[in-house]
Image (cartoon, rainbow, N blue to C red; front, side, top):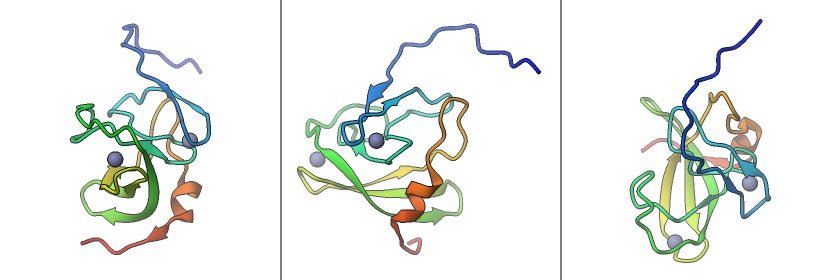
Length: 112
Ligand SMILES: [Zn+2]
Ligand SMILES: [Zn+2]
């Protein structure tokens, strides 16, 4: 079985996770903003992908919830400035999907 890979190249914005050191590949479908292995993120966006936040602190995953439309949501708190954020859990990705085990280790909160 052969799988066709896209022929175009994309600007590489993969990054090294500052929590676990894993090199995080790009996501195909969305803006990759957190580590698929440990789920930690960086406080660099105000809106997803805009890189408009100056903070640069580590975003610690603290809990998760299920959103009817978007699926799993990861709740973050910035270690540096205390901002709380939500990111979408990436359940399916051709390169590396988020670890459901890491997600389920967080505490679950009911959707608002
Ligand atoms: Zn990581
Ligand atoms: Zn911050």
